[in-house]
Image 1 (tube, each protein chain N blue to C red):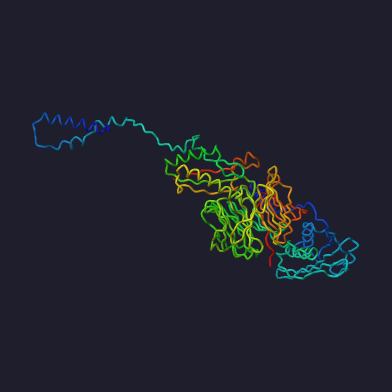
Image 2 (cartoon, chains in turn orange, purple):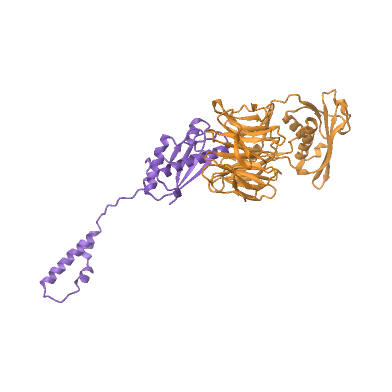
Amino acid sequence: MNKAKFMFVVAGTAFALSAQAQLRVEISGVGSNQIPVAIGPCANEASAPAQISEIVKADLTRSGMFKIIDATPTTNLMQTEATSWKARGADALVACSVQTLGNGQFEVQYRLMSTVQGNDLSGFRAPMPNQYGRLAAHKIADDVYEKLTGIKGVFSTRIAYVVQQGRQYRLEVADADGENVIPALTSTEPIISPSWSPDGTKVAYVSFEQRKPVVYVQNLVTRQRTVVANEKGNNSAPAWSPDGKRLAVALSKTGNTQIFIVNADGSGIRRLTNGSTIDTEPQFSADGQSIYFTSDRSGGPQIYRMSVNGGEPQRMTFGSSYNISPRISADGKTLAYISRREGGAFQLFVLDLESRQEQRLSDTTSDDSPSFAPNGKYILYATQNGGRRSLAVASTDGRVKQRLSIQAGNIKEPTWGPFMK
Amino acid sequence: MRNVKHVAFILSTAALLAACSTPQPEAKKPEVVEAKPEPVKQADTRAVEPVKAEVDELDIPGGKLANRSVYFDFDSYVVREDGKEVVSNHAAYLGKNQRTILIQGNTDERGGSEYNLALGQKRAEAVRKSMAALGVAESRMEAVSLGEEKPKAEGHNEEAWSQNRRADIVYKAK
C-alpha cells in the first residue's frame, strides 16, 4: 500500500517536471503606433487540434505591433461586414474557420479584412495535418503581420537552445513562442553554439561528448550526424554560409583559436585568419562575402570584419573594451553583440553600421548568445535572472521585450531559425 | 651479503680441515659446503631489513605538488606571480619523472561561451609555454580548454569566479 502510494507520487513529480519544462513568455513594453486588430474565435474552432484564434492573438500581442480587440461575434465572422468593426476601434478584422477533414487532417480558412474599405486584404484556405494545429495559427499570424506591417512574420519559425539540468544537457527545438518542444540531442557532456542551416533542416553545434569540443552537423529530419571538425585541440563556433555549403569554424589546432572555413561534409578545411591571438565566433554576412568575428588582437576582445577571401580585418566596435558575439542582420545594416560596460555588466547592444549609432537593448547584466529573427526585427538572447539562465527577446528598435523561462534547469545558447519553405 | 659471509666462513673452515688432513689431489669441497647451510638459516628468519618506500612526491597531501591550479585575472591569460611557483614545481617534477600531463583551461561564467572557450585555451597554452620554457618536453603536454562549461565553484560572485578562472595540471595515468 505504502509502496503504491510512493510510486504514484514519483509518477506525479515526473509529470510535473516535464510540464514545467515548457517555456513561459512574459512581455514588457509595447511598440509605438500599435495597429488595432479585431480577432474572434474561428467558426467551429472546437474541432481544431489547437486553439487557433488564441494562438494568433498571443503571437500578434507578443510582437508588440498590434492592439488586439477581442471580437465575440454573434454571427460567423467569415460572413461579417468588416466595416461594422471600425466603430469598435479596429483597423482590420481577422476571421477564421476550421473543418475536420479526416485522414488526420483539418482545413483552416482565414480572412483578413479592412474595416475602412470593407475589402479583403488577404486570406487563405489550406489543409493541414492535425499535428500542425499550432503551425496553422502561426501561419495566420505571419500573414496578418506581413499584410499590416509590410514585414515578413516570424511566428512560424523555430528556435533551438540548450537546457542544462544537473549533468544532463539537451539541445531542444521549439516553435518561436517556446511551445512544441522537441529534444534534438541529449548528452551528459556540454553542448554549445547551435546554429541553423539556412534551409532549417540541420543544426550545427559543438558537443563535448568526446571529452573535448567537436563540431557536428545534425540533420533534424533524418537524425544523421556528421563530424565537421575534430582537429587537435578545440573545435567550435560553427556558422553557416548563406548557401548552406560551407561552415566557418574556430579551431585551436595551431595553439591559439583561429578561424577556418570547411565544407559542410567536413572536407576542404582551410585557414582564414592568421594571428597569434584569439580569433573566434565567425559569422557570414548575408551576401556570403564577409566574415564578422571576435578577436583580441588589440588587447581586449573586439568585433572585426574581413573578406571571406582573406585580407586585412577592419575593426567594427569601439564603445567598450570588451565586445563579443557578433551577429549581423539579414539586410547587413545592423550588428548585434554583447558588450561589457561600466560595473561589469554584459549587455545586448546593436550598432547601426551606416550611422555608427550604438543602442543598448537590455536592462539585464549577464546577457550572451544573441541571434536575429530572420526578419531582422527581433533579437533572441540568453540572460540571467535570480541566478538562473533564461531566454529573452528584444525588438531591434528596443521597444518590446519578452522573457522566456523554464521552471527547471538552465536554458542557454539560443539561436533563431530561418524562414522555412 | 650475510649469506656470502656464511659461505666464506664455511669455506675457510673447510679449507682449515682440509689443511689438517692428508694432502690430496684437488678436491670438490665447495659443492659440499654450499649444500648444507641449514643451521645458520634458522637464525635468519628473525632478521629485519629496513626498506625505504619510494613515495611519489606528487601524492604527498599538502605537499608542494598538491596545488595543481594556476589562477588568472578576468579576461587575462598571463600567468601571475602566484602561479609561477606552481608551474616551476610541476616542471621540476616532470624533469625527474616520465609523466605526461593535460593542461585544462577554464573561465568564469561571464561573457560568451565561445570567447571563453578560446580564452581557456589561451590560459592552458600560457601554462604549457611556461612549462616548456622550464624544459618540459612538448610531447609530454597537451593544452585543452573547457571554457566556462565545467565550473569548479558554482556561485555567481567574484569568489566563485576567481576560483573558476584557472588552468589545471592533470597528470595522465602512468
